[in-house]
Structures are given as C-alpha cells and as structure tokens.
Amino acid sequence: MQLASKPQDLIEISEIRSELVTAAGFSDKATNYFSPSELKNALLEVLQEIENKTGLDWRAEIVYRFLLTRGDTLGGAMRNILGAEAKAKFIEAVELALHEKAIPYTVGRSKSNEEKVQAISWPERILLFDKKPKLIGKNVDVILLQTIGETSSINTLMNQAERYLVCGEIKGGIDPAGADEHWKTASGALARIREKFPLQGPRLFFVGAAIENSMADEIFSQLNSGLLEYAANLNVSKQLSDLVTWLVSF
Image (cartoon, rainbow, N blue to C red):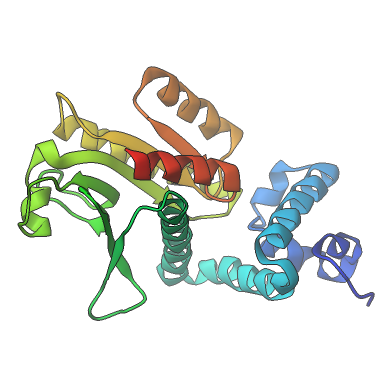
C-alpha cells in the first residue's frame, strides 16, 4: 500500500476508500446520492477541512472520525459524543471571539464533570448550555440572557422572559443522509421557542455540522423572513466565527 504525505493523497488509495468515505461522514446510504466524481470532490473538501483544522495531526483526526461515524450504528451513545464534540467546538469559538474582543469572561463547569461547560459569563451577559427553562418546557442547546442588575440564581433568570436575548440549536451529526432530519428537529425546537415568546422574543440561530441543499433553501427562507437571525455550518470556520462574533456583541 502506498503512503500518504497529506490527507488528500488518501483519495488514490483504493484499499481504504470505503473507510475514508466513512471517516468523512458519509453512510452507505448517503453514497447512493453521489456520482463517483461528486463523491471524490466531497471527500477532497472534507479532507482539506481536516488538514486546515488539525495540521500534522490529520491522521489521528481521520481515525477518530471513522470510529465516531461507524460507531454511530451502535446507537445513541455515539450520537451523544458527536453532539458533545459539536458543542465543544462552538464553545471554543465563543471563547476565541471574547478573547479577540478583549472581553473578560468566566467559565462555569459541571461539578460532576469538569470538562463539561455549563455557562460562560461576561459583563451583563450569561451564555447557558443545555438548559430546560420552565418558560419553554423543552431543552434548549444555547441561551443568552441579560444579567443587568440581577444577582439571583440562573433558574430565577431563566424564569424572566425579558432576560432572553438569543436562543440557538446545534446539531453535530455529520452524515449528509441524516442532515435534513437534524434540521427538522432543530427547526421544531426553535418554533416552540417562538410560540413561548409571542411578542418580543429572543433572536434565534442554528448551527449544523452537515447542511444539504434541501434544508439550505428552508434555512435561507427563514433567514430572509426574520424567523432565524443567524445560521452557520459548524465546519466552515468563517461562518462559525461570524455567528459567535455577533453573539458576544449582542
């Protein structure tokens, strides 16, 4: 077997083509949607993104992606890992945006799991993750609240509708075949938030790791109509950076 000096070289190694397709996030079902040339171009895009993200560690990243994607067939546990990875990437982007703007902030972590970030606070703002406010009745991935003049608990803050500035949904699934389903789930969650705030509600955003043409049209329509304030592909650095810069400046 030939050796690869960069991730793009893997395209030419036929012995690992199916494993490479899996690592790129395409299920067996998803490959039916692509011609050979389209699949090759899609693979090259993913491999370029991996190289940009990880540099010399691209080999480990590809193996990790393969294990995550193939492991997803084992059930919800691996989907939870993908979701956690997506949240971690989003949180990292938020912290970078705060740092670049020289905004002082503190990170609140779970007492039972030091690696799990529950909140990021900066002057007059607190960003919460994976909360189920009584006002909404369902779990929300991201909530930005105004904290001006308030020293009460987070639960008290979440019970005050006027504190809500932004809410968002993050979907970390990387399989294009399941992207539309992830969007429908997120869109339904965002619609419930709109219903709970019939007058002046929080601004809404969506972040997805896989965004296909069928869902892109609907997302664009919601952006144009004002139902969505922002949307971003988690794996497109510029889009994610623009979104979190807006978020920390809100």
